Amino acid sequence: MAPAAPGPGAVPLTLATPAFFVLVGTLVVFVAMLLVLRTYYPNRKRGFEGYLDAAGVSLAFLVFSVVLVVALVLHDPMGNPTSGALYETILAGYWLALAIPVVTVGSSVQARSRGSIRWMLPSVGIAILMFFVMFVYYYATAA
Image (cartoon, rainbow, N blue to C red):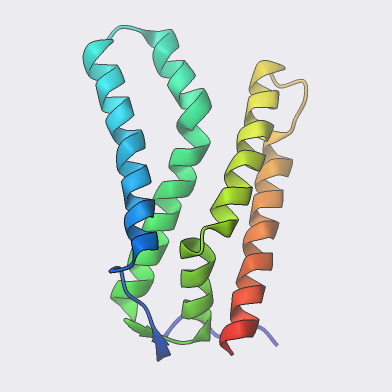
């Protein structure tokens, strides 16, 4: 049986947690680094490309994570088990700790091989699989 769509329930969801502050703080640090790079070295194309090579995947994951958690909390501060599992999957940090390095390596291998080693999409697939494994774990423990 598939989980219900996120909705109202008995699982408390809040943004006032250390995990959420760490998530947002990490995103702020990455954005600040980008702003400093663009401010002090505005015409350094290779520096900007290097930043995107190293931080692009992390930025994408961090933005996705912050948006998902905020949307869940704003939609239903008391969520159902599906909302709770999504919330925990992101804020527990395990998924990000595993998925970001996997996709970063896949992206870097593909970029450095000039596309001859196609690891980007498979690594994104592995990250998605990891997301669902973590979601199922948290869903099973919330239900």
